[in-house]
Image (cartoon, rainbow, N blue to C red; front, side, top):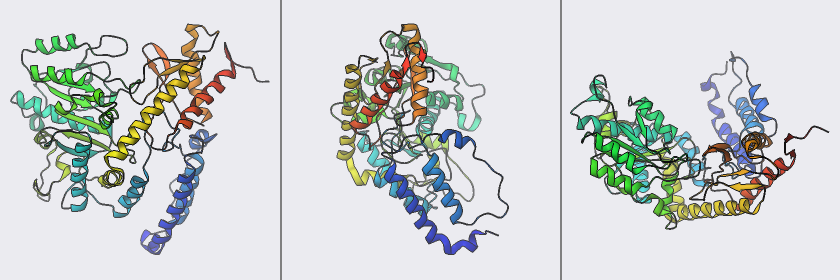
Amino acid sequence: MADPLNDLSEVERALELAAELARSYVEGVGDDPVQPPGSEQRVLELGGSLPEQGDGTLAPLRELAEMGEELATRSSGGRFFHFVVGGTTPAALAADWLTSALDQNSGLWASSPLGSRLEAIAMDWLRDLFELPPGFGGALVTGGTMANFTCLAGARSWWAERHGLDIDEEGLAGAPAIPVFTSGHIHQSATKSLGLLGAGRSAIRRCARDEFGNIDLDALEQGLRTLGGAPAIIVATAGEPNAAAFDPIAELADLAERYGAWLHVDGAFGLFARLSPHTAHLTAGVERADSVSSDGHKWLNVPHDCGFAFVREPRFLIKAFAESAAYLPAADEERPSVAYLSAEGSRRARAFTVWATLKAYGREGYRAMVERHVDIAHHLAGRVDAEPELELLADVQLNIVTFRCRPEGVEEERLDDLNRELGVELLRDGRVFAGTTIYGDKVAFRPAIVNWRTREADVDLLVDVLLELARSRSPRGPRAPA
């Protein structure tokens, strides 16, 4: 019987084996195809029944490493432009290994003073990095969705207090609807969060003035005015994923102050624009928000999963997420327990990777990375502009380049299908990854550059592969096989 207690002597060898196999993977991640050829079908064929006896410690590690080498998507490499996904800095990668080895439950100070304290330090450093005012508090969470959920839970507690309600104890039954205003840029993670919090997805009032989702400030103000002073929530987007568009945050802050609304800024990746003097204007006014969310496994380049939620008055988080039981310690400002500030009780010490990467590279290192990525985005836009078969669809605001393939002789009504098909072929080809979206009313590519490994040669390869795939087709569709 393969009892882990009987395998105690294998711990050292297991760690050595894991390091050896991981080293091999990491050494190739920059040059390997993003998706190994034929891997998707092989993944679908994986299976098998639960083993009765087990194979012991080392055999599954070797098997997992083999699957990783042959089947894993190289999303941590510099050629993964699908969605907005960063990589893992060297310091964050090593710290993540230590996080698993130390295995701290950082939800409560009592269970891990080290994990709790480093999270407090990491949150202070992040607040400083993004130039948020002193007093903002919050927690590290699993990603952008939970960061939005956490911030909006605080907003809901604020809204209830303004109505004289205690919905955290009594629920939303009988309460008025929670008015939420936003542009067309609102991310689905914020929409999901509002649904989970009982505000209702359909209650969101999208004040958009065009098909690109840009905000109609007059319509938003009119909506606030009709509330007659009742509290509302405004959700602003700092960097939407199609073209990295930004809502006018300072103007939304003016409206929030004028009408007594809560302003939440979803800055999943766009918050990092604050790091460079060349792009900081995009986030002007963030410091006036009531809550701000961002995503660590995007531009911070720490491993999945990580996000962060900041709230100007952390007491609203405590009201939403407080726990009490005879065996739980009371809240303590000097010895804080982040379980009382977020949804998780037991939680991984994800602060270790955040602390390590910020300690390793500091403000200047992250500023340099953001500026390099913005330069690479403009380089890619230049390549697109220089190719007659490609068409740039939006100005580059930050790190996303929105374009489509438009070969000569292909009629407009055929272009959406062509680009959609090319998107499928590009992902199947696997050398580089960039997905498609709908921008305005057009199917488009929208590669996002946030990985610390990415260089100009990587985006050049994206253009070269896409043109190669497009030129292998006739204007009316794929060529017949020879």
